[in-house]
Image (cartoon, rainbow, N blue to C red):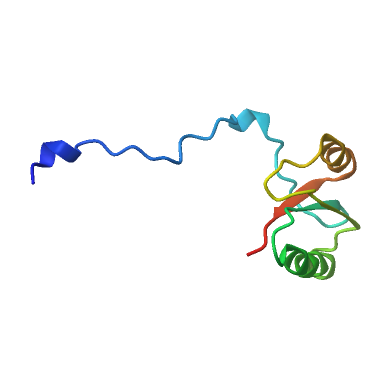
Length: 98
């Protein structure tokens, strides 16, 4: 087989289009913070995220947890949910199921 035939490989994953400067910096600690959890509505995601929530409360000392669920796994979260999480939370965990 001729090596020149396969000289270039193109990744279908593409390049992220969100510039780093658009992201908020990570908090140094979550102790005393309000943590948001956005569930994507996949199978078992509620089970997994409930345990993650409990672990964060016990080991990190978050003050409050605001837990919301997307309407459908294939759709973006509603603007209302995103606005609420942005306004109320110091950090947001977006979680998946299996």
